[in-house]
Image 1 (cartoon, rainbow, N blue to C red):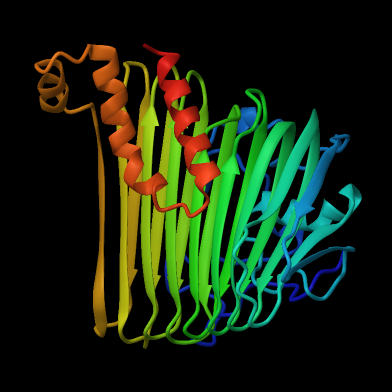
Image 2: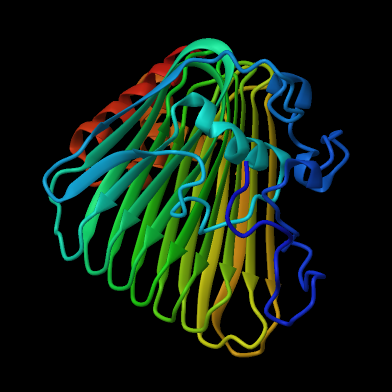
Length: 389
């Protein structure tokens, strides 16, 4: 399928070579990407054998995945076919899985397009539910556009069983505010490789929450770029990784425009044999930009033996005119002082552990503006914690 903007990524300095090791060539052509071997930097933490063919594009595309949209007043939705010029305008795929998903999503019913009308102030969230019905391979595409000066919350929920890859585009036009809550609540054997591509306009605000609790292997890659000064992006993430699960999150903020802001905060907890959490946080502050304000942070709690955490923050700055930039990463055990304090007041150890974990996640979960989701996410966190007490 021929998509828009075919070819390699062009760079602002006029050449084809990237100025940053984080800024790589992109293409809609699947053949532009060799099949990953696991030795590549971008794939070295991912157990490729558990992707079940998503990365090599084998011809086993018999998956059944449904997409259901519930839209309040001010939000519309439709299905777009392959080749629709609205699709693929925010990105060029930078890995083979994303390119495969863009090429083949039309085989699975087309793309879901959700639009928040200009100036609309939508109080109730819109829901997009993606449900896998079997273990076959499937690809998808979703486009969410918040038109100028609108405000809305979109909940993107994944459930069921599938071997699934998708591209999700978020366009936040000038003066708009868009909050996205992406809940990966797959069944235990599901595999999901997801890419979120966001463009933030002038004086626009984008806030996302990526919550990963289910699945066998889930790899999420949120990327944000700006189209004009004044854009603001906040990326929040939570993952609770249990026995044998692999949860991987790879964020990239590209401050390609002056006077833009970003905040990235991801928190994880791991419990059980073979639980593996990966967070890669990349920030580029582009050449010639001014007034950029960026900070990224990752924290992980290992609750039992047998877990593994890989946490890698990266920050590349190509200008001396920066308002603020920094990153931090910390991984460790529960604070024994906190547990001792609670136990010394008569609280049993199991209950003390639950209270500490609840407090660890509560601040982040509390920022979600959908009450029923806050309660559901905290209940599922506590359920996973109870499995290993």
